[in-house]
Amino acid sequence: MSDFGNPDQPEFDGSPSAAPERTVRMLSRERLLTRDMLVRVGIALVLVVVSVFTNRQFLGWGLFAVLGVLVVPYGRARSFLTAFVPYALLWFLFSSLRSLADETLWAQIVNTRVAELERWLFNGELPTIRLQAEFYDAGRLNWWDFYFTFVHWSYFLVPHTAAVWVWWRNPAKFRVLLSAMTLVLTIGLGLYFLLPSNPPWMAPEAVNSPGAPTVLRIMQPIGEQLGGGLYQAGYNIVGESNPIAAMPSIHFAITFLLVCIAHDQARVWRILAWIYALSMGLALVYLGEHYIVDVIAGGAITAYSWHAAGSWLTRLGTRLIGRGTASATPAPRPRQSVTA
Image (cartoon, helix red, strand yellow):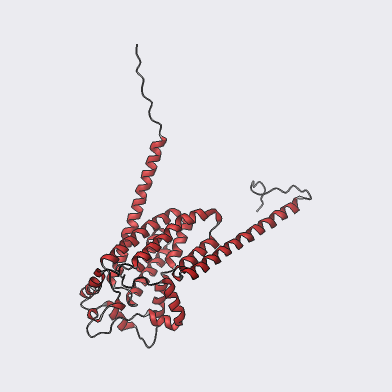
């Protein structure tokens, strides 16, 4: 296609010096791009080294920052920082406060209440025990054991990758996502303190089904088979700041946010989001990480938070627009009386 008439296309004046000047400009631009990438790589390496030598639990966020440094264009760097500094701070505060929920005397009193409720709802037997008795063989790991384990581990990557994608494509939707996530983590944190609960794999025999085996933590043999050292290192990086913070399931709550994000996307994304969320819910129960009650509570909190965040931001935007319109409208001039 011809560029004739395109004002953005530089004109070639035909002079002997035009071609060399254009070549010099192109070489200068390439040098700047190379220098820019070297600076980005240098910053990324510093972030990884600092994360490793200060606190390995921060390595995940260090790698996330590396992604931002290497990928985000300079033109959107301020927008990225404005979006993801609060995002990272939210998760940091949640993880820090979550570790305190099992330090109270209340935690030792009520930590089996959810298990008792689960047994009451399901005719005296934990569904996790029923699933493991039917499908799990400790002597021979099956493909679904690996599938559900990988689904569980993907929680530490997929939702955050989706958050970056939402910010890149639709900053307004990212604000709704961040607001909903703030509500989810705040409500979840409150429930951690009000109803601290052991996960099924930590449930004492008194709350397990009589005459049936106790709940097994299937992730552990999977991790050891794949490489025990790597599994333990990853577990130390991710950190299990409070293993009895099981009610609600934040794993499922955050995963279910992807269903909310995809509700107005193409049909294939909606289907994939539902498959992922349902796989996560089943994985949490089958692997012995959460009760069904935990999963349902996590989904309900997410549904409420997404609706509340959207409504709140809509009202806030309407109010700000109203104020702007009112301030832009000139005040009416006072009428002057006419005397004869």
